[in-house]
Amino acid sequence: MPGDIIVLKYGQRAPANIRIIESIDLEVDESSLTGEAEPVKKYNTILPKDIPIKERKNMIFQNSYIIKGIAMGCS
Image 1 (cartoon, rainbow, N blue to C red):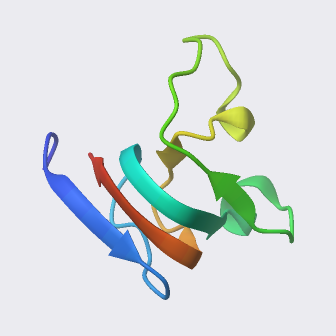
Image 2 (spheres, one colour):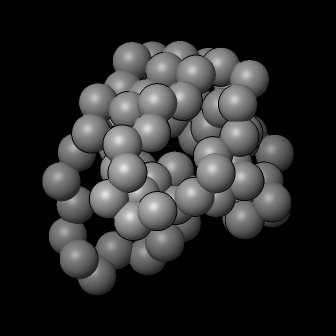
């Protein structure tokens, strides 16, 4: 549901697209979205509106797998 607060930790998949509010040592596998094999470090930062999807380090995308750390965000 849009606006829900979601907590994710190591071993879980993102149930929706999530904007990160807080994170600790977060790495995410986005290979299903980007095709890259390496995990991506994610942060709770403010980014410009027009940044490409691949470079949005403050978002966890649906079905991405949490490789390391924990995160809290809103859908």
